[in-house]
Length: 138
Length: 138
DNA sequence: CATATATCCTATAGACATTATAGAGTATAC
DNA sequence: GTATACTCTATAATGTCTATAGGATATATG
Image (cartoon, each protein chain N blue to C red):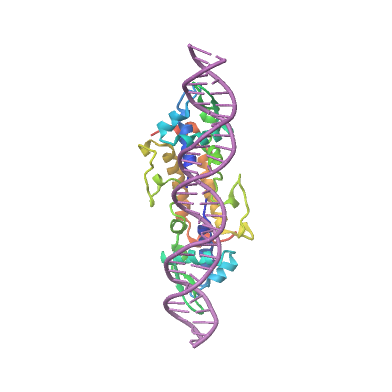
């Protein structure tokens, strides 16, 4: 399940991608347009800034703006920052790998094997969808 | 992320699929072989019994056994019982659908659209993998 | 310089789900 | 009738997610 944090983060990035990158957008505006608690969104945008997706400007006329071209931002990258591992089990994660306590040999594990398949499929979607493609509405 | 409950449940079913269906296997045996807390496994097997995957027998020589042919059991069905929705957002779930509070029109939502893709891909794996295929080790 | 604006940052409350255990009850084999 | 093994409900322990509070800091403007 996708956390609200990730969902809100994606929606905010999506909103920013539709705006002129030269004009900062205030948290309150995104919060109102996307129906997201302002304080919660504040912390989400902050972490997107710290991880290099967003720039910010303080004071009047301030706000947030995309640092990169939406073409250059993959949903996978955003997902990993806000949600964490894309894999469903840590023993199959590329970026957040951990061994399982219960498995003696993970290569003998059926769950492991299946979850590699799921990971690869999900990854192929998230890695190959840029923010630009993401924002295109039906 | 896959919960331990689901992971343990899949491993237990996998273990049972390798055994003779006529001979019940005790919780303690599966628990020991798969390194799972016995009491926790107890509750997992109980719910797999109540949902029609397993049969059980009490008393000496008792235990759990598969009710169906491993060919007839899909991982998707097990997943839905133990984990819940396969979809990453409720608004995209086939079996556990819920509307989002923050979306006015979910068909205009980028997250919705993307998560349908992810769901369909994951689904195609989980629906098309039977317990029989699942147990085959490398 | 003073003021309003808007982000920055840390801490924490509140709610909820997950994981695990306890312990008494029930059916069965021998 | 005794040991065995599942049944069932309750609950403890832990952790995570969501959200808010409140003061600090930087900037635009006149």
